Length: 364
Ligand SMILES: *Cc1c(COP(=O)(O)O)cnc(C)c1O
Image 1 (cartoon, rainbow, N blue to C red):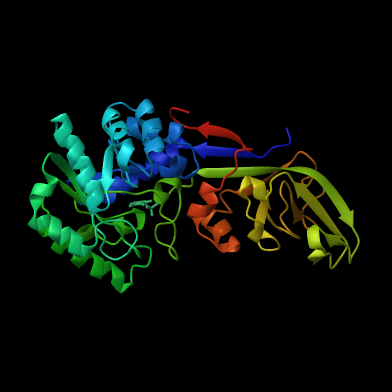
Image 2 (cartoon, rainbow, N blue to C red):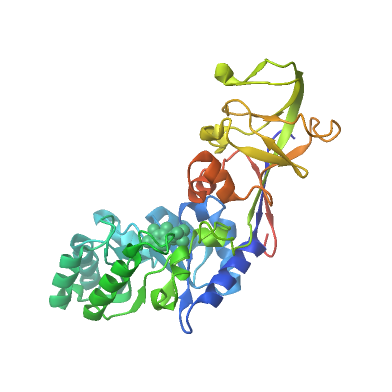
């Protein structure tokens, strides 16, 4: 076996969901965001595990993700963040997906379908309170509030907004968005209210409203960057050593000869590369663990391989066939991300298709 092993701990995902749910103010529900194949970890495994734990509300990004989830779970609420577009609206209705309506055209489209079918179609309204990304801008939201007939035929289950800076608790954006959301919510009081993503949960009870929408924290990412991570680790990525080379001082390693041994060295070549989501920006920057030894990535990350300086590791330990931790207890996702100059979200969603995936825990 020359491939890397990706172990995903479903019990840790469930424990994280329970711990987030336990932080919410009384009466608030904890949903789960499983878009992008549950942040790369496998929606088909993650969503049923959360369902068995009691999660009833799931968010995906696209229609296709919603259809895939509906085939897995028949009785849950599935909200589609990217909303609907014209000809696809009937597919949403057929699969009982709840579109997040992001602009007046989407509202009109979904309401027209509701009237045509003579049934109240469920919907969520997304209000933009400071991201200028998706959602009704404040002026549009006020216009809708002044003309509620435009929501005729719709069963508005949720009114939501999204925080731009929840991972920076001191950012004034949080209070600004909270105030903007409260003001708009007062004029659109139907259904339940939702504002917090993972980090938003840690901003305090006034951000919780009726429903929280965590994603990254379920998967072990730190919702409070800079502070100890309160979440259980979910991902363990082990790369296999293919070959160990003894090289003299001065010998270059990898493409572009960007690293040269400064002493007689041993270099282990491991089967994982940027095609597997081990980002090229980890060249001469990332590190792995071999047992309890930190072993730095030396030279460039190539498509299928990386090279590690294992000079300081016992020879019997750094041998072909041995595993190194590329992500693990001593190299958490956020640490890999920091070394790569990115965020844990990108590391997880880039996790490769070539890894052998093993699911651990209840329901695995
Ligand atoms: C992705 C997403 C979330 C989840 O965010 P995390 O930071 O991963 O917790 C919540 N709400 C919306 C609108 C999103 O797009």
